Image 1 (tube, rainbow, N blue to C red):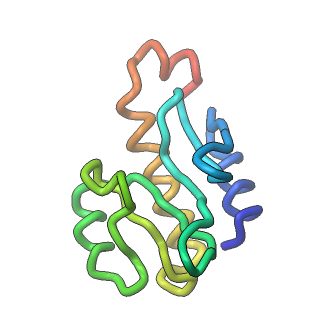
Image 2 (image 1 turned 180 degrees about the horizontal axis):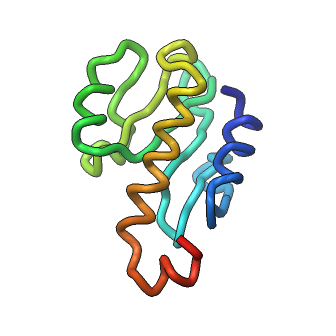
Length: 117
């Protein structure tokens, strides 16, 4: 999944907003809370996609080659796709949809209503 495809997919999710921060990372939020990040950093300088996970997904994805706990966010059950072929684009999209739903569910009822969630 390219960064443009990542941004297009995240942008199609209900009430999702995008900001560029942390040195050109594309950070996607719902209700002001982050659910997915596309970043390019490190010695190899290729795209890495990070997203919030359920407890079970975090455990399962931790066993997949090319996936690692997301730096700085692992304690909050975030995973990072470090290798392009670690997951199919469809699987990454499914994880991003799940991340959006997890974060949206944590918003207040009032905010969810305001956002139409």
